[in-house]
Structure formats: structure tokens, C-alpha cells
Amino acid sequence: MFSPVFKPNDDFIVQIQKLLEQASLIALQHYQTYKIGANFNIYEKSDLSPVTQADLAINKFLLKELQKLTPSIPIISEEEDNQQRQDWKKCWLLDPLDGTKEFLAKRDQFTINLSLIEKGKTIFSAIMIPVEQTLYIGYQQQKPFKYNDGQWFEFDELKQNEKLHIGISYRSVKDQYDKFIQNLNEPVELIKAGSAYKFCLMLEGKIDIYPRFHPTSEWDTSAGQGLLESIGGGLVSLQNEPFIYNQRDTLLNAGFIAYCSEIQRTIAFNALHKKSL
Image (tube, rainbow, N blue to C red; front, side, top):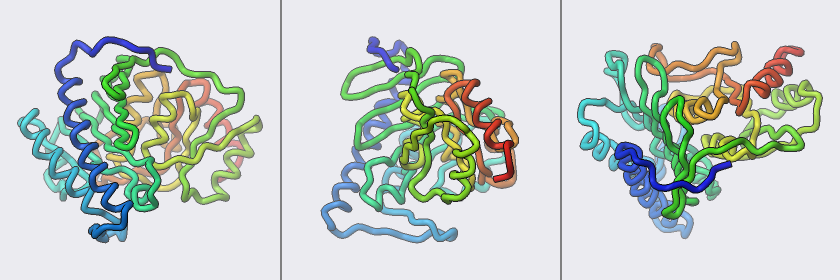
């Protein structure tokens, strides 16, 4: 749950909020163009995943504005080549449109993910939901804020669900998740949602555990991991180790378990190891 508060007395948070609010308006302009069937450019990247004119426009805007705001901090973006990144001890990690496939399916659950990385760890996180005009933002080891429609809120406590709410993607491989859910051995409700939008539902207490058994990229998980860690949860590999960032030759992640509390982490790993997935 989030409770109403006054605007944070933190210029950096407010500056990032304003940038992401502007970026979300760009996202919405392109989304409306796409939804009405007007001319809209969709491209295919080398890995065969789609990228749209919306991804590129948001990326261009945020690269420019972040470079103005923090000129000494380089940026790793999904839409850039990132060849020099391993020399950077501190950097931004940006996904200008997380959930491009949701966008193209005309589902409103796409986000803008932004995080600040230092020595492999996420120290500042933000996830913006353009359609809802809602932002989740905060520092590591501090309660996160939510901003919506001119009002600020601060994280208070997690909602307790009668059933265990499990977040899965629309395109999850069914057998893997069925086995995991069966191993939980308790009443479960499945919540289908797109990409990093699931992290936002976790912050709201609507998802307890989010298992992922296929690869993601670092810009998909960093902001969500940081926000979950700030409320006493986290995101760890299937070997139960927290993800680190910009420390490896690849930006690809393997599978993970995201959770809202240590109790849920234990439940998830008991199910994970009960029998082979």
C-alpha cells in the first residue's frame, strides 16, 4: 500500500519524475497513432524482436535529457550499441519501452524502465506506466514513492492476499509454470501481466511472486529489482543470487524469481527445488 505524502524534498527524484512524465507523453502520442491505425513504423532487430518508432522516440528524448541532467554518467540503453559499457563503474540503465509486444497487442501494460547502477548494484530505480501516468521511484534502502496525477505517495506496507498471487507473462511456456505452481502446494491465483508492469503490481501487493524461466535483459530487471529490494523483497537468479549489472560480457539474464518478502522467497525456492522444472 502507498499512503499520500507531500512532494519529496529531493530535487533528483523530482527531476527524474518530470523527465519520465514527459517521456510517457511521447509514448502515449505514438500509442494513440498506432491504435487508430495510422501510419506507424515497426522494425525488426537482429534478434528478431520488434522495435517501433515509439521505442526510438522515447530513447532519443531520454538520452538527450539524461545527458543534460547528469553529463558525467554514461547510459546503457536497449536501443544503443553499448560497446564501451564495461569501462563504466557508474551508469544509467534504460529501457525506453519495456513491453513492446504488449504495446503492439494494444495492451496498456508497457513501461519505461530507468535505473542507476554503481559497481554492479542498482542504487536508484524508476518505472513509469505511461497509460496510467503512474511512476514508482526511489533509492535503494529507502521506501519508494509513487506519483500519480499530481499526487505523491510513499510505500507503507504490503497488502496481504488470501491466496498466493503468482505473476506470469502472457507468453509463458505453460509446462514450466504449471510444475512450479503445483509444487507451491497452496491456493494460488494467477495474474497475467506484461513485462515490468508485473513489478508495479508487486509493489501494490497484487502479485506476491513472479517466476521467470526464460531470458531477459539487464534493462528489463534492474529497476524492478531495486524497487523490490527497497520494500524488503528482491529478485534473484534460479541459483538464489541477486542479479548484478554491467559486470559480464553479456547483458542477457537467465531465469529469476522476484518476490515481495523473504517468506515468499522461501516458498518459491521450496517449490523450485521440490522437483526438476
